[in-house]
Length: 359
Image 1 (cartoon, rainbow, N blue to C red):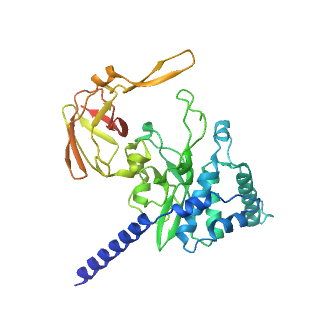
Image 2 (cartoon, rainbow, N blue to C red):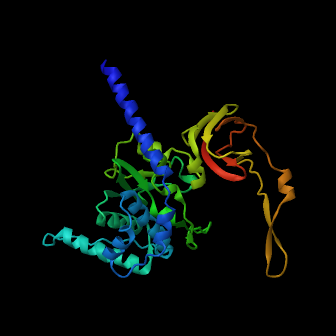
Image 3 (cartoon, rainbow, N blue to C red):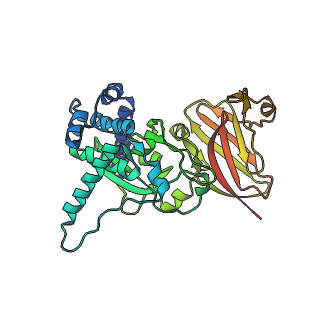
């Protein structure tokens, strides 16, 4: 009897969570997104907070207004990152009132961000939390590990990012204002950031921990809710090349990013994908499908990108089975020298795995 009651409770709870998340996904934020375009910072963060949120009664629309205003108005300060400098928080002596000193420093820090309209992840997340706090919306700033490169699969790393979580309708949701706002391409040789590209992506707006932890993981002491995923398991996850892949993929097999195999062994791949995939390819360190596009010189000062007919003939495609939204296929390991494998969906890099071929 007790077991039956527990099962009923669990089912009801999961149903409630699903309904809550489904409700949020169905909300239309067009009116909020249009409205925030008219809001300007006038040297007063309290006024900015009021201007952004006063037209809206529900917390979720207030949070959306704050989120979209920051992504619209604050650029990533890549020059600060390239300089190698760090944010310096003032230290407290025994005679200092640490709370007042830290609060004064943060207020000045946020004022500089709003005036210059530039920040790094620490600033983005602090500004988001401050505006939520001013609206009495429960919000936390999380620092931790964010994976952005294929070589990070299976490798330990230091704390390198900050993001937020907000409480809405008794559930925690995760947001990354920095990554939602845009990105910075890097110089392949030096690793220096070249410029800031403003390009909004909705993937980092109100996500579950399960989805968010594919490339975000909190530092110890910054967990908002319990998780069965350990830090070591997070580092062992595959690399996902874009928010589009993260947005659409689910239930991936293999779910770990470091695959220990033997020569002649078959790796079985299976996953759900919301969008239709017409072609699947596999790139490895041994063979990569050539790019379908090439650049030609059409005049002294002008170039043109065209389809490469030679490259089209060199493409190799993987036969797969599709049942509704579930895709499955196999790959046979034929070389001892195989050390990475990446899946390509419709000519776009999707997921990379590290391969360890053992004797």
